[in-house]
Length: 168
Image 1 (cartoon, rainbow, N blue to C red):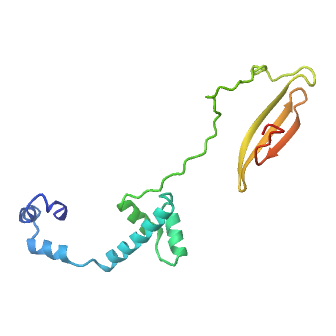
Image 2 (spheres, one colour):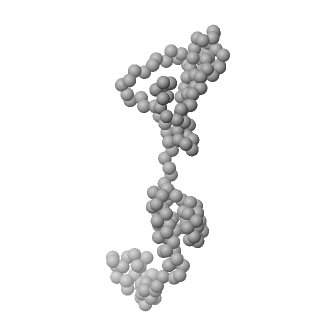
Image 3 (cartoon, rainbow, N blue to C red):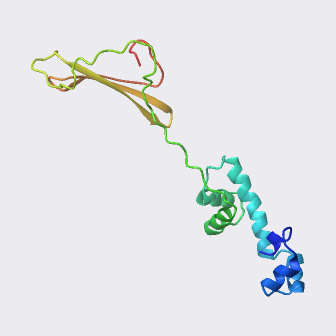
């Protein structure tokens, strides 16, 4: 409290108000950092390095794990406290949200079924859909064509890249 306000108020007045002797305050202020504080400063540098390397995304568990893999001892709670004291929080990764781009000037096919998914005879109504599935190898595009009378999947296609022959 005194140290943070030295530029604004006289030290002697603050010491009197807080019932602290001036000599004790200066003794405390000029004392070297304790071993624990020195270790925390060192650890703080390492935490900041890992935090910046991963663009502010890791939390204390991931930072602790990486430091331990590098041979630097640190507990998750200690890392979490140092991060909290310095205002460092992990950024949550933005979730991917695929949305159709309806702001285009291309023609849009009419909705002929108008939500009526029943069929009285075979080969009268067909429906299709496409979806994107994330895999370790990248996006997988899955398309399905369904005949509504028999509910039989007539065509199933998977592609990893754009294929103009099937419109995927």
